[in-house]
Image 1: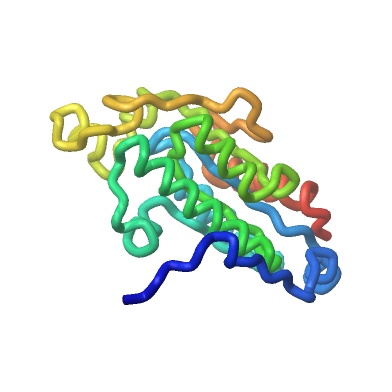
Image 2 (image 1 turned 135 degrees about the vertical axis):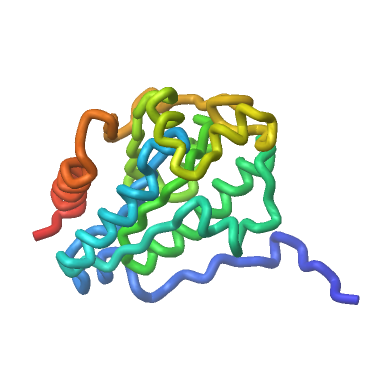
Length: 203
């Protein structure tokens, strides 16, 4: 039987490569863009489109998508408030490792609770955390319903569905807010791209 080590015996190992070293090598600052909003607000669409644009600019970046991580890393989690919180904690820890490696990370999660988003900010570090609130109204998101999720939630097939049977706590001080019903995808991506360029000191 393997004996679990005491937490005090687990020591963080510091890299000999600093964030300043990586910035000098890559030419930009790492960052987490944390997309939040209702299902159907456009989080995944914008996240992957922005990733494509950043790569064409020579920027090493990656998307952590809510559906994708539940296929592997978080497949053991459900949608209760406790499981949602653990989902966000794990993603924030992964995102922190990725920005330590010098990436720009784009996350796409409903992340409905302010407390959980604040936790993610504290794990990642406030100076590296950029909250993007897709403020598209619930009725617009439900009209889109590209996955049929709202229909299933209304019929009771999907319990704990944000906006229907589970609450969403909108950010009170997000770094950026975008209503995707007011702009085209291309316009939203261009706006986000310029924001990243300015924030990360990109050329």
